Length: 116
Length: 424
Image (spheres, each protein chain N blue to C red):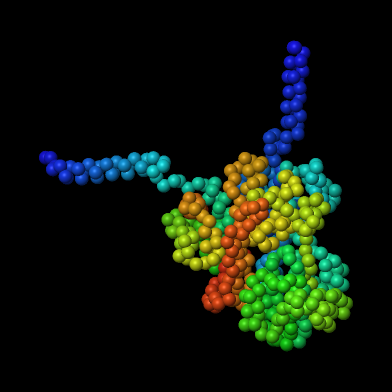
């Protein structure tokens, strides 16, 4: 069985797209960059001036330990971009790049909350 | 020719040998030594971070005479009855778990040429890098008629501990109808909103106990102060008629105080038989920093904004209230933030740790009345030779009661967080 020319072209385009996608997933520059642990550790020192590294919530300061990374990233970007309005958090988030937020998400995501 | 070449070779090896002897411990076998002088928010944070993050590669010694540290921050909440004294007092035990050697002794001098600190008993402690975080000293000669010998009669309570409890005891003893005078200091001083949060907490304690005929006069050396609009609105809202703030244009200068008689004389008015006078005098960097030549003519210590390294000595880092930190206030939060920058830079120097550009942060919360707190803060970076504010924020006068209550919940949570960061 053979495909008509237009369909054959479509199938090739799909194959090509899949191939590029697979190649991208294998290449460092195409995949999302791995979070930088040293950067995450340094930046985290700013967070633990208020948030307990043990993951315990006290008063109005929430726990930020052990979150799924995508949730952490979304919340920090919301503060950075002004969709959430706490001025303390906006102040912290405003100077963070995407790479820095990813590093923080990986850092705190890897910590285990202490038993409460 | 051969002799000359031999001389050259010998000379080279001798020079290399001398260089090895003179090299800091960084390049030798011994562990590099960091000595931290002062166990407040700046010093204790730096000691912990260097010891913890170097994982034993750097020997960290903290010199602090006190066995426990009562925080200045939230001491006003103790005054207002919102916190116990125990809840604002912290030990140094946990720092040992991070590898810090804590020595409870007073450091009396720094021998910069020999890179040694001299303790009160004459013992010497060598360092490759020193972190100097002595906090402030009070200028006992800045208020006419008042001096060190009067600090029990007219307490300052601007250094934590015994003075904090004394002020609380004196406040509790003020009779209904008694006059309180708070002498507020000129800039720069520790904790810019502190005197005004203190006035708020005094007013709260008086109101709570039904002593509503009392009056608090604030005799200020400044024309304006931190969060002024917020505090003054709060005083009118919660304590009408109880608090009266006067700047120099109103009081026409503080002429003198008489501790024995309980009198405060200004150009405008003389307050006699005061039930309590709280003198918060002018301030300067702690003595050890000034004696070591780390301060300039201002009485505070200039630093390099990229690192917190002393502008006077590359082997010394100065932190917190003792420094000239550009746009950053003298606050606990600021000292803690500066300590993290210094810790990283010191590890960079001694351990070749990866460093990142300095970034600083600060927030100061103040409680005006139960469930009514405000905040001010900002972020900072090294720019144009100083620590410069990038962006700042302050609470607004038209915030809802829910926002103010939430701000106080943040304040309480922050205290737990920062004290765990410093001492935990």
